[in-house]
Length: 73
Image 1 (cartoon, rainbow, N blue to C red):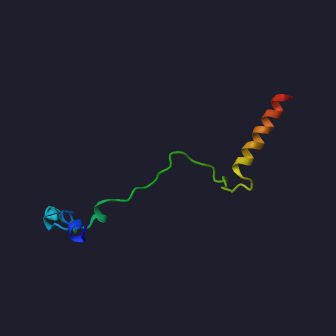
Image 2: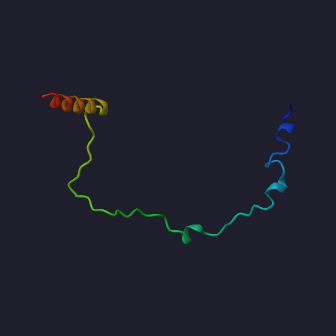
Image 3: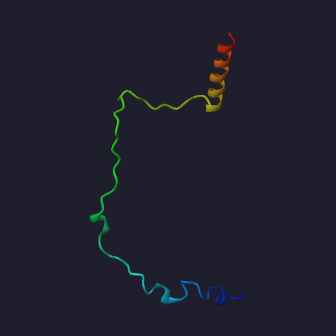
């Protein structure tokens, strides 16, 4: 199959397919404000985000084992 046959009929090949497309050159940034997040609840300022030293699976298993050990006592 030749490239011409492959491209024949594609929208980019036929200029009439884009005859109804109009580019709007108006300044859209002035008419639309960017979205803004407004929190609905207050969080204490002393909250600190820290990364865990242990893997999440190990932490889960440890907590699970502790809870099972407490139930067995």
